[in-house]
Length: 479
Image 1 (cartoon, rainbow, N blue to C red):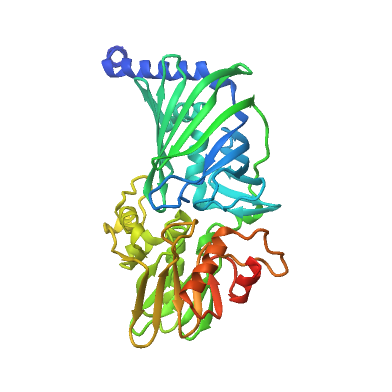
Image 2: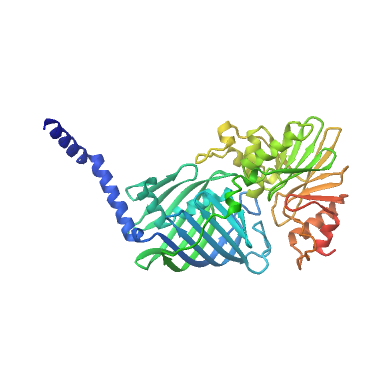
């Protein structure tokens, strides 16, 4: 009896302590937010809208704003029980003349479909499911940073509420803080998501003009910024709660857990290899005492796969330089991995400061190899031209000046072998495919620049697509 009395007294003291009262108060506040949103009555949400969207990581100028596109329609489905999301967007060209990446110039309407289920992400290209694991963290953040999502995540034990702020964290995926307004509605979510270039990237989502849909509330205005620049501005026109949608993980996605690690290499000249195996290629050039890699794309996984392949090729010389074609995130994403292996980065002078900041950036949500190594890397700049010559081979690095795709575009030319390496300004068409009319201004500008430099090119090694003779460039632009 005495033991029971002590236990009861201790429990009463604990429950009446300021800490316990505060915890109960915060739980009650979180319940109030869930009730205001109708989160307990919602397992999934589908909403449609239109507005403006930006291509994150595809700016024309290093560190500049992301290219803007008209968002003709957006359909997003979210399933909180299964951790699934499907985005279907239709975009059109907004900026004329086009500047930056994001597959510009856009001709007519472009439909894209992006899917997430748990820890699997993929893109639908026609009927084909293309694995996109590099997008998992950001898509999970987009799912759980919705008003209902962040409340559900906190109630499920992934976060808590203190005062008017809900904090949620998923290890190695994202951290998020949500600000709750006086109506117990989510006003803003600020998240930190791992990024292959920036280490951590800050994403801010502002929600406004809530309306009632099927017993719950959902915002009709959504504005988002990423990395300090606008990334989306959507007006929601329709919301459907508890909509069932299919997001089963396709077999090609389940069976390809590490798509960026697949490599294949082809010798195209003595001491020159074309390294492929995925969407983004690299080129290894052998010098007397070291190797040069042109392009370190995507992320650490791809960087280490390319480095491993380079070391496996004879005569397995250390890599001294990685040459960056331009600052777009898909082409720059592997440089932190190269820098972690003490490889010096060569970029255009206009991008040197931006690349230096990228190498010095903190990676706290998911520390990468560079963060773990405690290094910041070394960056060297190129202006109009730089030559690497060790007596055995000459490598010329040229600036592709005045091209709208990116201000810092570099190409690599091997005069003896008559080989040219470039990215994005010319991606060869599939055989027997008719060239676009009119030709891309990026490709026209590239061809004009080559003529100005009077380079003798026999073959082009594009960092997307396939090796082609120089004549394929002329065919593509109708010359």
